[in-house]
Image (cartoon, rainbow, N blue to C red; front, side, top):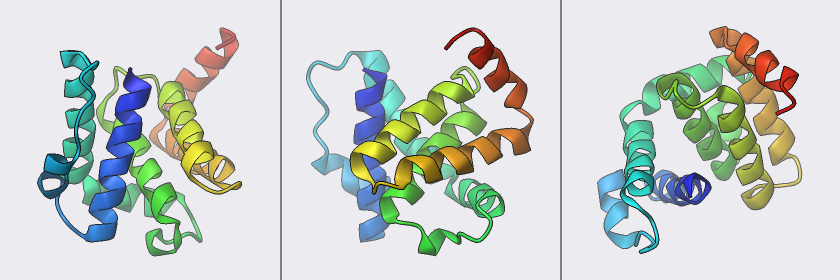
Length: 145
């Protein structure tokens, strides 16, 4: 269910970016699936509200890591996938960075261009190393995950 929550969160963030509106302007037009339990709804709202609240800090981090790729040059979908995953990696430590990266890459493959998955993986990998979380990634890879 979290994958679907991320997917819908991405759609809201994409609309927010394109329309230059706030999350609260987009949410009334975003029906949540009836099949979602309270945890999934809460996770979705945590993502969209968290990214909006921390957007400046997130954008600063992404700009620092994505050398040669100013945010305005990134595809809108890629930029918002990076925002979503960066929020998870930095502000939701209970989610392993490897999970956030894998989910972001999958979103990039589904909604972005042929290059989106590799681009997103590269930027987020650098982010994790920058934040000193690469040990966590190595431990996960070492366990066959």
